[in-house]
Length: 167
Image 1 (tube, rainbow, N blue to C red):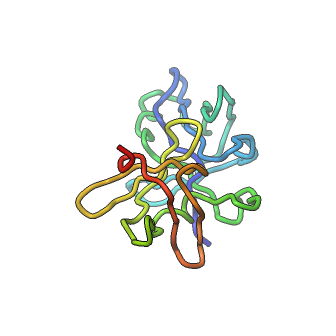
Image 2: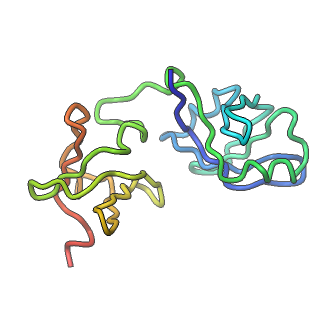
């Protein structure tokens, strides 16, 4: 079973070893049901037990891991993703996708494959696809105004509009 990211550690928080995280789940509430996370470290995948997690606002939380009690140790986790077993992910509704399902899909615009989804970012209210088009990148919001449909079976995302091309 593969492990999938549910959050990313942004930075250390406070003096007692806590970290500030950005939660990938929408809504973020299922994140607080996890009692441990896997983190890729220089010595391999390690499991970290959650001492507590405090929801701050939106998709931001403060997490304290058992055994990490100093700011300097917490700082070593900056930029790391918090992973869980795929079977632990919350169930999806119709039309919902996990980020790992979308990354790597071909993007089709005007009947042609224009590139691949390299990552999915969440800079605002909607996820945004970072699409590599060979020599360039385009950013496409995952919103009905831009995305026609996602076809996981074909491995494609069909877009009807690309912001950079609408000038």
